[in-house]
Amino acid sequence: MKILLVQLPTSHLGAGEKVYPLGLSRLSSTLPPLHDKQVLDMNIAMDPWPDLKEKIEGFRPDAIVLSFRNLDPLAGHQASYLSSLKTGAALARNLAPEARIMAGGPAFSLFARRLMEEAPEIDMGLKGEGELIFPRLFEPDLDPGGIPGILWRNNGMIVENPLGPKLSMDELPPMDVEAFPPLSYTKGNAYIAAVGIEGKRGCDLWCGYCLYPFLGGCGMRLRSPSKIADEMTSLNHRFGIKLFHFTDSVVNRPREHFEALCRELVNRNLGLSWTGFFREDSLTRDNLALARKAGCVAIYFSGDSLTDHGLKLLNKRMTKQDLFNAAKITADNGILTMCHFLLNLPGEEDKERMETRETLDRLLSIHANAGNLGAVIFNHVRLYPGAPMTKRLIKSGALSPDTDLLYPVYHNPEPHARLLHELEARCHMAGVFSRLKLPMEAQ
Image (spheres, rainbow, N blue to C red):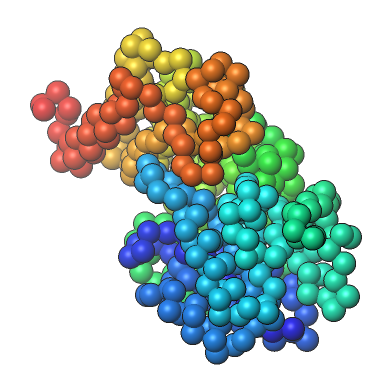
């Protein structure tokens, strides 16, 4: 078959930061060489839609696979990328009326059936991980009823097959670096690592807003530290990649696996750098020192709330003291730190908003002298179907069960909907004063 793999655009056009399509790259490598394959990442195209048209018309594929990574953006940009999927599917059907059109990816998996309804041009959908079944979708005697984890159309009805077994992380297929050259992504990024590395999949924390357990499983599947280091080594030797980002939901849990990975990287003396999301209550001075020795250059925290009420509401299983302890550890080590918090949570009143400001000021004060706080990113809770907080809001009557959550719905009620902007201004001021070595009292 002639197969076209397409990474749909899910970033603001003109954004300088590029992200390597790790999932689609791994799927690409599972296709047998008997197939004729071409790829297109629309996120690195200057004008992606004419490029897609030219690719389809020139290649004339038998199957077009649309990878849909993000439903909407992060960091407070309230937009929807649904148009990318709907336009991509419609364009594919218009230009290749006989081709089989397929869709998958994390964003597709969250709303698989609904997206099949929204985009009737899609013939087949892949829900969840695809490495074990992807090659089977292109066999000449395809029997969709026997393939787990797919949705398909049968006499006008959408049939959804049960999910199959999860992949062992030590059996991850390699990245297809020939089809998706990493160097196409590493030039120009000023803030983030372009290439991701998987250390694990799944999460056992069940934070109140999050669907990681749904996407990757509610237990952590760990990848051998030697396998992780092998992939980093290969990418460095072949392409000169020196900075990586761990795609794990939490890179420093479980602690034994994290520390074993750091020791593996130290022993190999690769001279590489990496970043990742850390859990505050699993960070110690000793394992941060080990991580820095292993190449960690930046830490992302997702504490998610600045109040005791919020931490309990979000099922974070942490306290504010854990936030302060972690901040002190990173400040004392001078490592670049980014923090993420959700604001205006359900049930928060004036007392909690005062506590939010006080907690933030204490965190800013801890980091002030070290000047190591790269950013504090605020957002509101994005409500997804099936997430614990969404269910709670529906049960309390604060959210109608008929609310369409396909498009971005954030919990940010009046009269405190502007709290985010107030705190962003506070952080900006603190950052400027910190860089200028001035105390905040001088404002």
